[in-house]
Image (tube, rainbow, N blue to C red):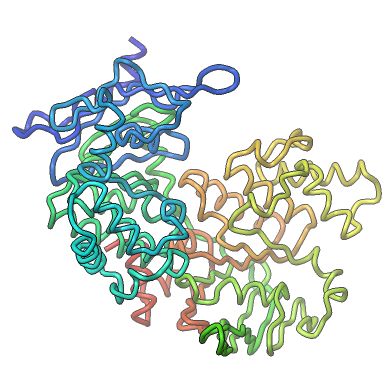
Length: 555
């Protein structure tokens, strides 16, 4: 009986099955995948069934580790050698069980009838070949056509995915393209042979909101045009609501619930689905205390870099202005958001204010003390009072040091805590304040999840009892529910400790939930600033309007 209860919202066939006369292009039943590990087996996917019909989009949602990508890779036949697929599993494509196909038959199907785009295009494109030669190869593997015809087709595909200047792009290498352009190349390769099914695995994770909206709209338009079926794997619920027809919710390798998009959002049944839908960033910043004084004041901050251009024999240098004479004021207890597309100068500006890079000109005052002219050694006494939390906690935590050593290091450098015992107490306090247990001091960063690592990075920052923290995209790589926890934590710490935050992000939903004011940046300039609700509800410039639309409507 217990089993019936678990899966009562997830029967093997779809809820809209009876209303359909056509057969699914993919009908997966009882898919179960285990992985061999050192000490036995790990169940990654358990008894997953789903149906996909021609011309529609189904979304598979869930947090990291729920089994979404493993399910997709099973369909593609791209599992590692350690994976064991259950004998009972079937994935029927056009009526044939493709799990029984030989490797040769699978290869023929892959990239031809069923294609996939991955989360990180840079890891799927070969860095030593041009874009054109990689698309040509993708075409000629499955089609007997001349190289010339394949090149013609490659150009058509790049035009199709709306890459600017497609003929020039064919000759370029992956590293010469932006993230959004690389993702378009991946889509072009996936569409090279007009597949019946396109699997998009988190296709927009690392992209700006505006580029994200373009990529998703592109997939949707191509789908309508070519009549493809799409499996969209994502954890962004705004995207799901906007782009899918049917949703499967996964947790711990099982389908918890599935339904048409409309029905699922209107009336979620499973407790986990309800939790997921409630994790969207919401709420707003706590009101500022009356008369809070200015902690940080910057005027006319300018940062430029010299860039090489020209040829190898005739190199020339040109100045790139990343931050163009900007002003900023931040009060105690306040959170100021800094938003804009990639390359708008947000991070450079944030780092200049903290003196992590050297501005060309401008004045910066911290707690009424001028810091713009201070040397590295003169800045040191202030470092404990100004802290940074980066986007990727893994690269900012030393993998060879224990958690206790990582957090204690800052206390030693800044001479806080008279004895080792005293410092250890402060480390434990900071971990508990950041919502982590105090008994993990001897463990290493790799033993924790992304959200836990981010909490450790926050604990490291608050152990020094700072007054100001620069938060550079601290939630971008996290799942929705973890994101909601980190936002809650930052609010709580601000309240308890009177912290001021400069919050750099391109996720406007998080900015709305956390910030008091917001500054919008484009090409190194400030295009708009004001209270967060005002700027996001009534944007004054077309650029801000575009950002807001992309974040909240994805259309």
